[in-house]
Image 1 (cartoon, rainbow, N blue to C red):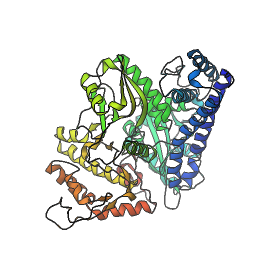
Image 2: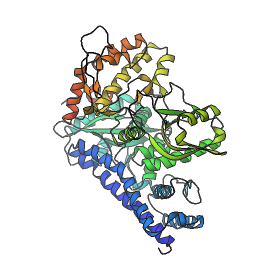
Image 3: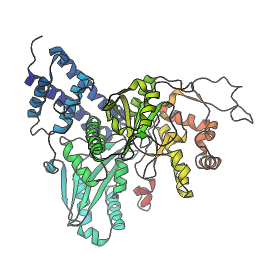
Image 4: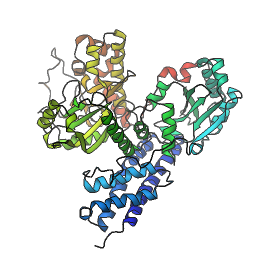
Length: 575
């Protein structure tokens, strides 16, 4: 094998990235056509394919490298030189930050994530991106100093679809009335321009035009939601102008958007200006750049470690049977490690657990299942890991832990957004209205997950969290499966709700009439949940959901309340 040409190798890696990005862009760019043709199942398949692209592209590049050299026979100066050659190619590259992450993935794959060294990888970014550099390439600007109606017409005209509006005049009237109802005359008069991102954001059955209204003193979100009626005609479903609504729209339990852009850093910068409480890594992930989101998260994590001094400790809540879960109290995520052994009640393997988490990654999470991010050989400073946590990890997940004097390395873990476990929330909350809302949203959460063709399996309330917006999210996936993989059966007539002796119970049998005894603990909470969602305890309801899913029916799970839809807000302005 001849000695490798470092410059040529750097070029090959970049070409591998660019091929991957073109593939990604083709799938993303076809989202408008899928939307216009109401190809909802094709949209779900495209989302899965787009997630899978990265690893396929990475495997191709790594295979090419192995054909040219033995990576482990090259010394560190070789890899430092390779990084410098690669870096030279990134000048003026419109996706330089994504290309850096792809390079990191190549090195990580070659060395099983053992060379976490900024001289060899881009542990830190090569440069700081200054927002606004190519802003003209990602936004359309509309002069808002004329009439509201004229500005709205111009915006709608700037985003053409190969479809007719069901009633464009009605939609424009609703948009104008919403603005006049929501903002004062002085506020509206002060708006000088409206800036809209050029790419349309597609997800599930909706298309979003995302932008902001700008005056000298404030910036207000401006998001138009477009949907199709049963005749495949366009209509405006609502307008979102509250930051909270925008935050939920970009929530961590939502599937990734399809938004076609060649300038992701600029789009993310614009979104971050709209949502300053969202971190950059969250926004990259929401656009489907989840690998780069992991890179940005890790950099954010290192920065937080340098600026804090608290210790990693076991996460609050009931200990899991499958996962050891811990957190850094000052940081907004939890870390999950698969245990070495599971109790007899958990008839699953480690590989099955990993497959369940992958299934959720690839599936439409409908705003109800937390996104998870998988890491290999994740390092923690040993001095920051509490002795109690270290002892627990070594006891229950020892095969996944390597400990040195300086570090605790976790060979495989998942990271999720931190939430308050629902069981703790219901124990601590004293406001009856908030408790009722949480139980109602728990029921809705279970129903919406089922409608998305996922049976949650273990529905104990400790496996759900509640966000700061009061939204219930499922986050324990070791028993999930497709709805078609379960048989929902009636209990035999008996005074004992636990009596299953008279039945031949198969491994896939589920008895919904038992759910009321297991989802929540206290009797008062059980009664409330049963009153709010009696269907959950009826086998016929679950069988009906199975039938709907089998027929290909995809239910809408909107990222905003029904009350905000224009057909509810302006019932007098119907067809």
